[in-house]
Amino acid sequence: MRNRIACKSCSTLNPQYKLNCSSCNSILRNRVVNIDFWQTVWGLIDSPVQAYLKIIQSEHKNYLFFISILAGLNFWLDSLLLKNVLSVEFSSGNSLVSFALSLFAISFYIILFSVISKYLFRFLKSDTRIKDNLSIYFYALIPQLVLLPILFIIEFAIFGKYWLSFNPSPFILKPMIAYVLGGLEGILFFGSLILTIIAIYTQTKLKIFSILFAVVLNAGIIYLMLIL
Image (tube, rainbow, N blue to C red; front, side):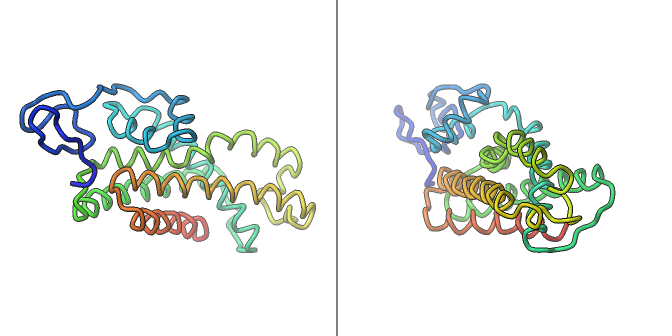
């Protein structure tokens, strides 16, 4: 196994999520019961691999429901922004239904990738759990989610309802400001891509694979933004 912990008592190699050695039952590491949200957010900036290890080793994957709701909202808003930039028409139907669909789509997509990851990583000699993969993928969205309220308030204060519509597009009303704000959204998305690469690397210890798999995962998110 690539992502392993060697037992100090019997030298057995164990998956990094294990607390006790599968051979002699010795303690392998410090116990992590809960995820400290703000400490984890800072850790993802300061030392992302160690932060991801704590997420993987935590017994309770707390805050996932809260993060998934924010992810659905961010996915919905970013899909409108992306369609605005690319001049792709979108439905002007019920916003609540559109948000609910976005929440379901991003959650189902990440769950699906978490399941695929477990078996693909196992093929690559990395033993992982679905709940750990799910957690690290959702926490990779943190750069976008932490700044979501601030950015949206600024965007809505400047453009009002036109930030979310084509009537007219904010890129026609105030193009320079609109592209700056859109660029900030793009930088945050890129930050999430980098964190996804690090998350996959933490699980597999394979650099090139981590980059390629993270790009595929995020490309799928962009595709979903365009079709929903």
